[in-house]
Length: 334
Image 1 (tube, helix red, strand yellow):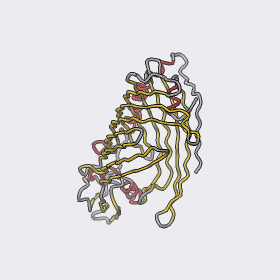
Image 2 (cartoon, one colour):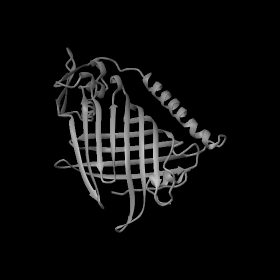
Image 3 (cartoon, rainbow, N blue to C red):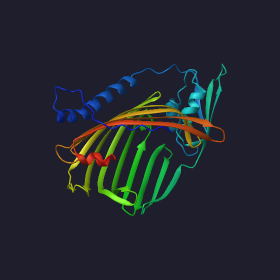
Image 4 (cartoon, rainbow, N blue to C red):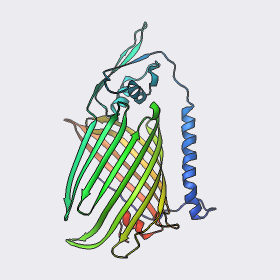
């Protein structure tokens, strides 16, 4: 699969403002744009009501989770809903083994039945790896349908020869059964990275950080837009340059736009998915430390017989930072 990675200087277009002013404006502009788009979409009218929606087979999952995923919240009847599209949307929640949608559109009592077969949603994911003397043991525990409300909770951690990490994440793909989504992430990470030339260590750096992030987004048809704010304390020491490890609390803001026209099939998603994300980092390594980046990735997956698939993936990005330590954190050496 082709992979494209481009890093270089990125120019900002807000010439009347000094550079630090542009970075401080970024979070406010993200919030204003996100609120305006969501308000405009929320004001759209509902279709005429003429078909009853009936959900069957959901022993654990709240009915509103299914109706919200299908765009039919509240069980209100809709005019001629597309059974294939409803099945695709409910299947993409990944909460059910099978989803069937049956339309009974007789004149006397038209109705559409959504029949689901629930699956086990608590998944332990162990992982073990070893490379050049660094052995890692990790375990992630994921609940995809917490309390039957479709919420996702992740608890994970890794213990390694050169470090360890801990992650706690909660996400709500349908906040109060609406098209809005939200997430909260907390993490701690400590690790010693090394660059090798054969069996020799050329250089290394110690990276340690605490971070907390909050996300908000909205689904609009096949598109998903969102913003993220992160507070982070980072300590990084380079063995070659001896740069100081102490740093203050930094903050960052990100915005993304995602196009997702995929259908979940057993263990992969068939179709096209493209995501573009822009990020601004401020004061991570001091008052004058700042960075900005833009990245884009996409993949196209084709289903094959016997639950097999072929995926083509592409990635590209640009990065601009005022501190040399940013270069090491994205994998560079100069």
